[in-house]
Amino acid sequence: MQSTLYEPEHTAFRDMTRAFLARHVAPFHEQWESDGMVDRGIWTEAGKHGLLGTDVDEIYGGGGVRDFRYNAVTGEELVRIGASGLGFGLHNDVVAPYLLDLTTEEQKQRWLPGFCSGELITAIAMSEPAAGSDLQGIRTTARQDGSDYIVSGSKTFITNGILSDLVIVVARTNVDKPGAQTLSLVAVERGMPGFERGRNLDKVGLKAQDTAELFFDDVRIPGENLIGEKNGGFGHLMEKLPQERLSIAVVAVAGCERMLEITLDYVKGRTAFGRPVGSFQNSRFVLADLATKTQIARVFLDRCIVSLNAGELTAIDAAMAKLWTTDLQNTVADACLQLHGGYGYMSEYPISKAWRDSRVQSIYGGTNEIMKEIIGRSMGL
Image (cartoon, rainbow, N blue to C red; front, side):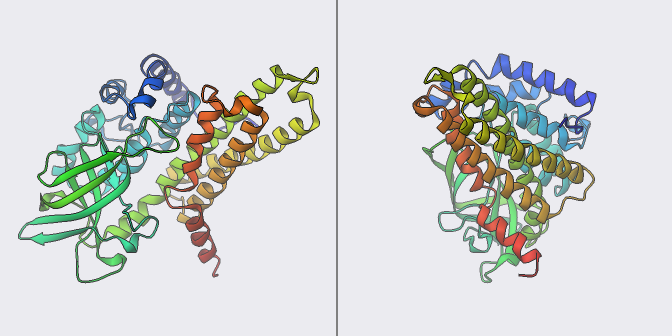
């Protein structure tokens, strides 16, 4: 079934993105995997080519088009070449909405030009050592001191944690009251005294993606670094999380399609018992089943993207998209690796890397168990 999501302008953007990745990313990504992070220069190069901030107003250096289809194209093309180290999705899909919708004009002028040029790399810090999907368990505080805030606490599993220059930190601004209604969003910037980064975490997959622990030891930030409403952070997060989860679903569906493509090519060429592996009924049935489910996932994803652009994507639909597509991604990864036999377990085969990189998809952005809770509660259960 042919997707009707994209228009000619998106196809042109895809061609440009694909050429950029072929020249500036593909030859270097294996080295970045060994290094544990990408070269910072790739961010400014991406900024020069218009890959960052496509939805930011042109007066700040962005593309000026609020259309998530451009974000989806970038995500799909990164998956197509296995470039899982670049944190462009976190930057464009997750952080951008906070900076576009919740900041003052002064904050926009201060942060958005660098955001679009790649000179200011962003991150968002929610998870803590004792609080992941449970935002009400956050212990990091931002205590008001005159016109400033004093940020204390720690975060973990932070994407772009090493390279980031601006970190949106979810913190408790009323330290005397528990629960979600005392959370706020504050911006901590590189170089602020007391802001330290821990180790670049050694992960199962996403080896070139810098994921770090962050520590805040009485970091003094100006009141002008409060993003959105004080004590309104939980509401801001609930409003923006659907796009983050849809971004994860984009990667999941593109991942399914890529893994099926490389596996189909493999089973047609690999022989066993004098026949191509793909000619066995088991191979045909497994791939037919996965191709059908992936096609269904693509149709639902495309519909969700249309809904997001129209301002109609609900938290429930986003949770469903994230749940279904990432569970499917892991199913496809496991089955496709199995069809590769022993070669699938060898690191030099792309299915091996895809299998490793897929596993976290059902964990971050809210675990899939939390997605089921969201969906179940919407049913009155």
